[in-house]
Image (cartoon, rainbow, N blue to C red):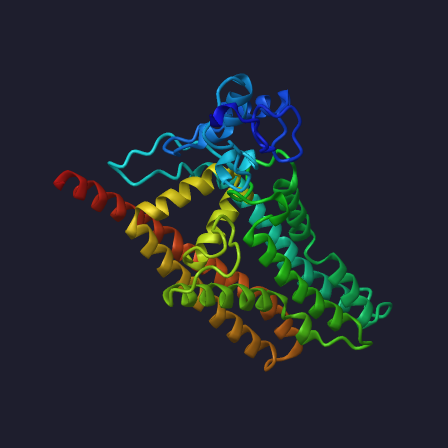
Length: 371
């Protein structure tokens, strides 16, 4: 009989030695599987718990002969290969839109201090240092090159510190805000875009401070450059989405090849999860809300166009002003106008989103009542 023949398959539970490192039959495997099952209770995920317990179950009962070798699928995101990215979602009540459980009201103080430091660092610092050193007491002692070298060296201190704080939160082993199903080396979409924008800003600052007589108009361009980078990326992603092009690469929690989402989706996900301390749980909740609510998807599409077109127009206007008006005035406009625009757009966005979310809730509950 088939059961009397000796097994030659290396992955059989009866085999005393395992040669495949992905499936060691040790006590550590049993402990890992048990821990993953205890911590990663994923309601509605078929086979997730069984996949994690299969090795342990077979090793405990060596007398049972399975009809096929039981091998854990290490490529399945539900097998707890990246346990800190798997968050239990056990409270969806579809009588109303799935809740995000995230509010800016409880974070008002942190938002206030963050943007206060950013404004001091990116507006008052470059403008104050330039006019203070060039037209102040040290004008006879400092050349134009030295003035801009000092102001450029101190520029963006808060932004750079925040950049490395983000990196640490995403990179550490026990990260609670990591992208769903991704390795920690991926970081997140917003972080890579921030790196990309900072790369071009550094080129502008270095090119502007190297000459003996620095081109002040070039040194006024970093904020506009950031708007160009963000605006065009949002617009291109939304155009690709409308044309049905799949994701060309991983975009935060959206894997490569999946249907694209509005460009602003990844920004909301990453900023709220990492900078806003919403964690990976917020990524899960945002994903469920996006999939469940058509009104929510349409709102994100409108917001993407609103911010993308606004950023491109503001950057274009700022660039035109910088290269047409008097040099000192151009330096001031280049650093102030993009932040004024962002403040106005945020002031419009907040009540707009609140109104749309209220309408979404009312329409949702009304439709459920009719059903």
